[in-house]
Image (cartoon, rainbow, N blue to C red; front, side, top):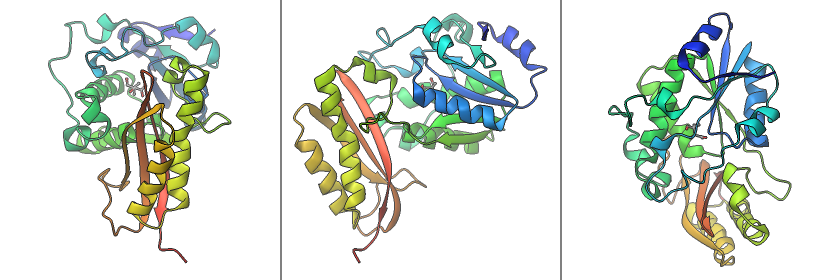
Length: 278
Ligand code: PAF
């Protein structure tokens, strides 16, 4: 039976005898991408803690906070029995209402996802900081699917000297290439088919990765051919800074894309190496 903790005090008591701890923060609606994070966590520490908490602080007005899927029983059934689950009610994490003190994500936090979802990354970093202070893990595991989130968490850990190792697991995809996301369940069959344009666009960028301009043109032509995909951004960023690379940049980049399919916002990314044609 999976042990579930709703209070900080009960989790802290249990963790006193836990040995090394690897932590996987989630908002629930678990899928195989989350389970890959849990498997990595089990490889690197004696005890695995998974948090399941839909964090109101990282949702903006008009976003999907109310309809975000919540099904604790079904999430628990997917997890190995020896995982410790922290599933607090909102009042346990925010007993005084919305936090007055926020971790701010800075300039990078205002770009890309942050430009479309103002305040999202401040809310995300704030809850991650709170959860790290509560769980006090040796390792925290994130998925590469949320590339900007990973960049900002690493930055926070470095900037604030948070004593934790950040481990990142490759994106898990459906057989057809769609990056797994809890929000994929909002897509009907036609929208799912249309959403495949995101991973195809990234593959096209990788295949024509001679220059930023060539890679972006290849990605855009795939996205423009799919009218059901409303593109927010597609860009090539420097993995070290998360800023767009210069036109003459050569070497590794992260190609990032975000789009709306129907009412569902989807993101994806892929490593793209820019190199002159042979
Ligand atoms: O990636 C997520 O599910 C969330 O942003 C996280 C890290 C659990 C914080 O709420």
